[in-house]
Length: 228
Image (cartoon, rainbow, N blue to C red; front, side, top):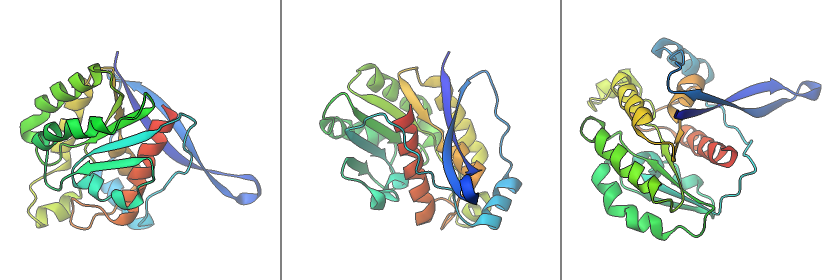
């Protein structure tokens, strides 16, 4: 049974009143449900904190190369890139860009400790869910390296409507559910969507995030990969 990995980052009080960051792992199979974060609660969290919690608790799994293949979400993270990272992305692109650049992405695999993180779908989720599932499953079955798929992250429904993007969180949730159910056990899922809805996020236009949120997503990916 396919398991969905969710890493929840929680704050606990340390000795002497200090605050430490810890990662709590939950493995949820796809027959279980998670109480959704309501739009009202998410906006309240965002308004009250105006910042996203960032964990520094990476795990002990050795990763020699991180290959990020995606769209504008990865563009926003590249400013935080570390020496072992490779970013391949194009703003506004989707499935066809991914297929046209898979060979390039594979060329950066250095050994069995390399990983590829695919973060696409926000630009063409209505048309290409099945195509993404087929292609990513085939890629994972090649066993060239561990493949991760990052679920499409949330938008700000109110702001995005004003800017005319025509995307809603309800639609993205439906797409993400389809990806979770369709991807096979060789693909590990990074659920940054639930993470952001839980801890808050800030956007510049309803779709694209501010630097702090991009940094949080980037660090969350590293936490997931190095722990699982």
